[in-house]
Length: 241
Ligand SMILES: Nc1ncnc2c1ncn2[C@@H]1O[C@H](COP(=O)(O)OP(=O)(O)OP(=O)(O)O)[C@@H](O)[C@H]1O
Image (cartoon, rainbow, N blue to C red):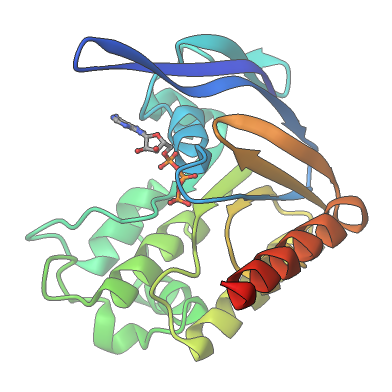
């Protein structure tokens, strides 16, 4: 179980303190799928980066299965069982997709396994395994290879930041199946940061982050109707303009 208590994150911008996250607390049960949603700039990616150790929280505590991981490095968190796919994946000149997948898996993967991972995200393995993960890949191709790196290893908890971004409808449908499979087989807990209705509807629980705070967290049955009501209010306001 992942437990996040009273997380805060402040930055200093031109001499002024800016509070990005304020008193964010939530937990994710084993095998649970939590979808984090909310308006742009609310702080969702910042939470993900703090969970992964890319950014350091100003305050609060994070524990995984009772182990305090608050001060762990990125490597230590990965070892503790956290996997993460960036919203905008980094590219690496000179590194092939199969090498990247092997690095993520922590062992040299056979071609067969690389192809299997690549096809799970809708890419033809034979075509992509030897491609460099550099600027020659399209945004959607890079994003899918990044997601495959998380699938390459067993984790206790996998965090995907806007997995739908830049991905075509066909690959998106495959991705949904992969998430459902992980969830159904109880392989890992999932945190999906998303604005996509199809993903939000898969959730066990939904957390809405707005202005750096948890606006609401609850079961899909509790939170989803509020999201829909908010959307139709916004549409009405837009139509009246
Ligand atoms: N290092 C930083 N310096 C300045 N501002 C930052 C920094 N990190 C985050 N922010 C600001 O914090 C806020 C939250 O950003 P974050 O990327 O977490 O939002 P988000 O909810 O993921 O948004 P989106 O839905 O657009 O991806 C934004 O206003 C962003 O500009």
